[in-house]
Length: 312
Length: 228
Image (cartoon, rainbow over all chains, first blue to last red):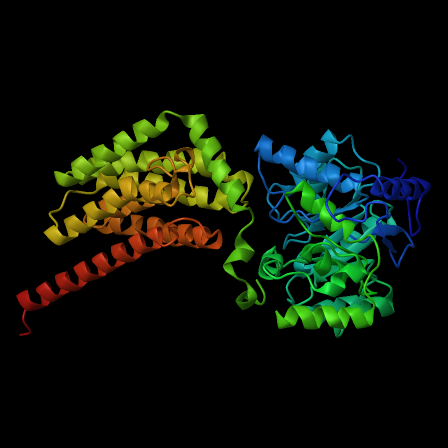
């Protein structure tokens, strides 16, 4: 595949997206899900490329080492993810064996063309960045990454220079930065204001909404896509609320489970491009993708959702 | 690491409890019946300790630490934890130090309470910790951490041998097991694992015993040499 330069969406990507959407209507049975509906997409602001609003994270869940049983389980999760219309998978060199496990899954699934590969550079030495990126690429077994992000702003100035050069050379399609759980937001904003970013990745959920004040509006203003990590606070949020019944109004926005309720809140924010919940269970990945089906809450409903969860 | 105070224990946990426990199980299965030899070595160390011949035990311990550095940290744990290779280096250094201590140290007589504390720690690492894991109901017998095979019980047994020993090398050799007891507790605590308190408690007991011994030695020295 020849390298592509600049912005825009290739035919292969458009077809892959369409294939993903088509697959979305064929997802396997999961109780209470609106299966006939396509998975909703948001466009990447810098290119106009559509991306399903629910992706797949790999923090902890895909770090299973050489355990072949667990590797196969991860591959099954990926299979269900692609079958349900998913595209974006995110990882990092920090996540232990998650990268080779993703590569194993991609091999097993015959390299699904709809994959949108997102990884990170995470090393204090800027000079060692390209070698780490190459190692990550080899683990995934992809020709090149779609998106590379500077993990937790580690040595971000130098790494962004590297990533911007890779993008200019057509060796990378999108550039981003990440943070999690509200860390270094002031510096994060400064980078958003001063560097040409395609994506930012951050933590946002129904209880952690600090980013609504500055970062999400700034992303909209500057045309930067937003990937949301830790949408369930590593599962704690779902555990905290699942003892309570879903509110009656959950049915109005097509939520059959708490996980969908929490995900719909996140992806309904107009600045959010996609959320990337991580899971080891096939039924959960289907449930997560189904959150990107059917109606999304409007501003009034979002306020109602927040009030309800905060009252629990 | 910026904003370090915002990080919790779970932020440092790179894997799920299930992955970790399966890793132990696969490791145990792959080396069976080495566990029997390891426990036999542990019993030998205990018997030597009871007979106040502790230096030979140090040699056996050194070999155990070297094995764990290679087989557990290098071959297994490093596949899910990038920090494991650093821990493996520390374990290898400890193994070398224990072997050196076995040859370079000399047997010293210890106070009975200090010897007793050491034996209790050895028994804890050798038998109590695996039993605790089994009785918790959270680990099957294939998933239990065994002395000489896994780091946590080995660190506790090593404390048991070193605490009553005295001498500079033995004191230096205490550092890694003590640190590991804290790391082990933090790891299990982050996973809500069984007996997360056990290794740190063993470490605290070891520290208290050493401090008490140093204090009593200094006090005796002060009384023996009254000011002129």
